[in-house]
Length: 254
Image (cartoon, rainbow, N blue to C red; front, side, top):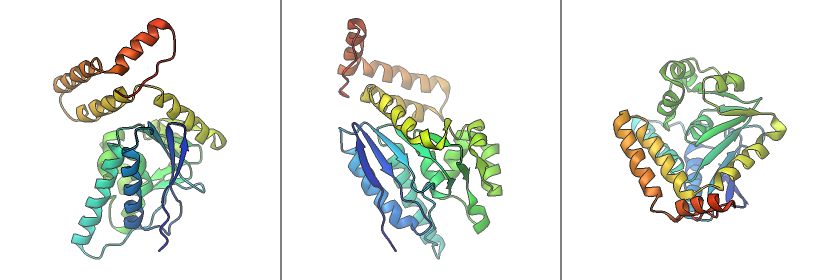
């Protein structure tokens, strides 16, 4: 079994994480490699954002490990969920730029990113139902929270793929680009985001995620505290000073 790790390319403060395409990569080995990469990225303060993209027109179409027993299946699922929680809570904006077929684990990875860009060739779906099973790494839950229960059930139960235009309509995708411009447009967007305050980005992501499934009043209390926390930071003072002085801010994440 070939062990093909994600390839990392540095673009200023942005890491481009290239996922290997092809059906020959097994889930467990791939996820173990991805976890090591994520642990390394989380520890690097110089990395302010991550761009996740596929190779060869695919977005990590991955064959299953094919567990033999329910305990083996549960163990694989628990490990995969742990890895995608690590991606989701990296503390840095993570943008996926997708083309080709985005299915199975590829789609689960995309759902754990901050948001998704795609080219017009992209197609999205969960074909696991045709094999008598379901997504196992948080896909059923993240999908339903993003597109609603009805659309999620349609995709999960039919196993059919939807076009990039349909994915945009149901809010699975944020923006669509031509194939030749997708990756550069995604990189430009991530770099623009990374010019903002790292502290405000991290706290903002935490507030949105933590407040999504709780009542509005409690969620607004989280927002209040996050807003107040920003005013204890160098970044907030730098942002205000740069605005008054009509210059570009120099954020440090402190």
